[in-house]
Figure (cartoon, rainbow, N blue to C red):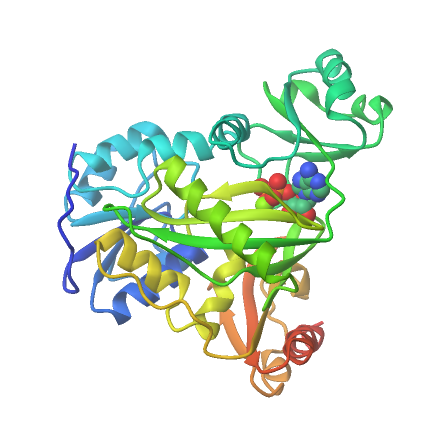
Length: 381
Ligand code: ADP
Ligand code: MG
């Protein structure tokens, strides 16, 4: 297995497993810093493949293709956590791969993730493992109603989640579709925030400012900066994020999603990669999350994460805004809004709930920049 503290300097080649929008924005950042980026993904038309220097097309379980990709890289990273362990093992034969297979195994399974964080002394909402109606009925006495039932594996953007008020609702759940579920206490939070932390092989860390997030239908809708939390909560959120990155052994980025309730800060979930809530850093911070990801996996000095503005906001553009699968909304109307930045991911087909792009705005007043991104988005429908 290739592990090394060697610094990969600009001019080197970074491998990116995954061809989505996170890989695309990573490729933008890495190439602007002088790296070559090779993407491994399912087709050369995927968002990241469109902008990378090269692309190796293959399925994740096609280990010959994975090796052809990995053999060209000085270091390898990824943009989503559901990558089979053997794929990462194949990558590691050729180049240091961050985050590691161990980190991924933890992040792929909500139960393992929650147990690991709880065992590290970090705050998570009360939860229990369930497999069927009878086990839910048993654990509901300790977890309490209402609760959120989540699939242990392969859920994202609220997929595979049910909010349940009582055991009655659980009768509708398609229990056999998944072998393992997590029953989690419903947290009546004041707000949701997230912290992106970067960590290098030699253990250096750096956090971004705390982002405040509004969700709609369990999908991130708006990110706002600065978060409306006091200094104590902000400090606590950053400490938790750093402790989570250290206890999981993450190299690269870790996003920690948190619930804030009064002074209490509780971890919802973690993701060992760039995060949708961090897109706002492209314009709002001296170093974006994508540049920081490059710096972290290449062993470079971590960049300054301070805000370059007083306030910033980001609004997601979901496929619902598209008149039909292939007809675009009126971009020129959104771009009339002063200060608006448009980011489109180059996806060929729009579907409801699919993340197609985002708009952002920076300024001095939070209400104003939030109004601007909402206005820009409104003009699209
Ligand atoms: P995903 O992996 O789909 O992002 P999350 O666990 O982050 O799943 O859940 C998505 C959203 O659903 C959260 O951001 C939050 O708004 C809501 N949610 C999830 N779990 C809870 C909970 N225990 N209490 C209250 N709201 C929750
Ligand atoms: Mg989430």
